[in-house]
Amino acid sequence: MAGKKIHIFDTTLRDGEQVPGCKLNHTQKMICARKLEELGVDVLEAGFPVSSPGDFKAVEDISKEIRKPIICGLSRAVKEDIKVAAEALQYAARPRIHTGIGTSPIHIEHKLRTTQEKIIEKAVGAVKYAKSFVEDVEFYAEDAGRTDNVYLTQVIQAVIDAGATVVNIPDTTGYCLPQEYADKIKYLVENVKGIENVTISAHCHNDLGMATANSISGMTNGITQIECTMNGIGERAGNTSLEEVAMIIKQRFEGQYYTDINSKLLTSTSKLISDSMCMVVQPNKAIVGENAFAHSSGIHQDGIIKFRENYEIIDPLEVGLTQSEIVLTARSGRAAVAYKAKEIGYNLSKDELDIVYKEFIVLADKMKQVSIDELGNLLKTTLAAVA
Ligand code: KIV
Ligand code: ZN
Image 1: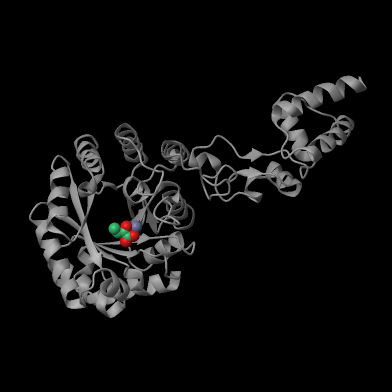
Image 2 (image 1 turned 135 degrees about the horizontal axis):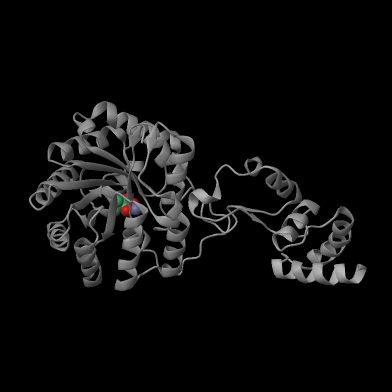
């Protein structure tokens, strides 16, 4: 593959699973972990081991079985959390401890009630302690999106000097605009000594609908790992969507960046996560929504039938679908009716199509959508009546 590799850090089973109602049982977690491995994620954040015995066991069992990706366990910058994470990860082929602390003025004053100096001490202490268990330690500067760049530089410098192998710059509250996030990453790249020797990670939330845009603008400014979830699930408005990142990189950055995601598995992975977590994917969701490759207006249907690329920038086969969909509604034109009729064996002449179309529009006006079976019945009865 040409270009720079962007590592995909999947946090569906941690940030995604902490959403109310998304909790998975142990078996479901194992099945989802296997699917994410097959999809090609580089890092799998399997849980927050200190948070519950169930999460501990999930991280432990995923560490035992899933061998290709790095297995990561979350912790706060607290000794007990780090020790428990290390225990849960002990069987992993490549374990990573993900530890961190809030760095924004709001978090320091109103959540942690401490000082900037003490935060740096705690951050360094947490990284050094985690390094006593594993080589690969990722540090997150929680709420980095609202952290002043000069102070953030001091924090990131200190944790790299303490041995962090990955520095995560989360926009925890989904506050940044793409240019601000890009400038933040650029500033760190230009001002932290040794940052070129570690992985720089984006972990963006979607409170303003900017998570994917921020991750991509971070990537073009030095980010080499993107933290994301299938279907964009996660706290509040969710995280960066894995499927969006994978397809943006594939479609728009060919030769510059690449991921190891097997895009043909995106649709099936999305379905598995959605079904297991009982979390419906909105129909208009990019890449994996039910309507992402469906065409319903007459003008678009005519264009798609003539040449798919008139209205599609992604080949549906690339994301694991078998074809685009022409949906029959009252907005559909003759071209779409003829096309769908042909799919079920009717090669209509112009006159036959005129007759069928007249009846079709009457039916379609009464319904949201005309199914292929309903079209079949209509063809049968209408054509029998004119014979
Ligand atoms: O959003 C966030 O800051 C997080 C951290 C724990 C990485 O989820
Ligand atoms: Zn998060």
